[in-house]
Length: 237
Ligand code: ADP
Ligand code: MG
Image 1 (spheres, rainbow, N blue to C red):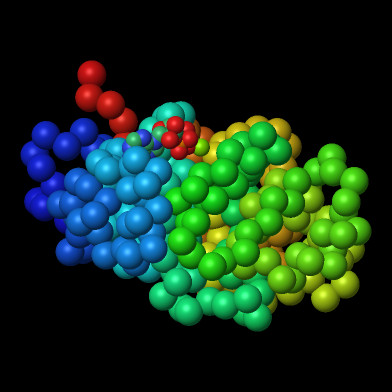
Image 2 (cartoon, rainbow, N blue to C red; image 1 turned 120 degrees about the vertical axis):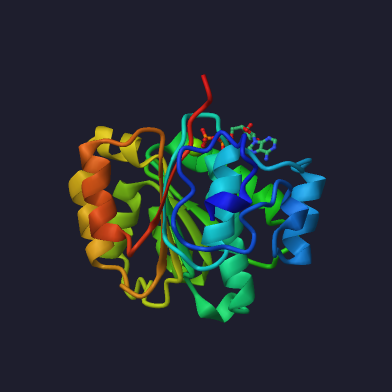
């Protein structure tokens, strides 16, 4: 809650839900698995950024998040950490299939997410795959996509698997992430996103992060989030 954050915290709004972790400033104060704590420490992440401090106390309590913070503010860890923790707490294993889908606007950004996941999640046993367009091995991907626990994808490629891959199964999905949602919508993926979200199980946790709050981001939030914590973080000027 608001009163638990330091008075000088440059946080626009910290949401209404209570979290016992609202005052934390370092990753090692959060209720994280030892595997995640070790991955963060070895990757040299110690202090949380503002969007991480604002959102992790809520996302780790199972809530949906609508997070807005400018480019470079650390949104990636704000969703990768709760994705990994959710699957870890559920004792997700190789035979459980797709537990999380993370959607990114471009191949390049998806590749960067994959690298951060490999580094921070390296002590966990989850399998992760990068499903992005422009690669020729889509047929090989189709055979293996159900064996992956975490999918990092561009919207077009994910929809291609939903449409074409026999037995593509995301019925057990636990967490959906829409990263850089404003950019996903800018590059014309609104229809693809609506088609994707409509095919996913409704009982799930969802994180929507964006650099800006536009009308179309709010439309997408209405469609994909359930009673979210709204966290808008901006710099003090
Ligand atoms: P955004 O998605 O908001 O644009 P990123 O998640 O890509 O931001 O992070 C921007 C940069 O900040 C990256 O180089 C990342 O490694 C770094 N970073 C993120 N969180 C932290 C942190 N808690 N401590 C130090 N550096 C961080
Ligand atoms: Mg980002």
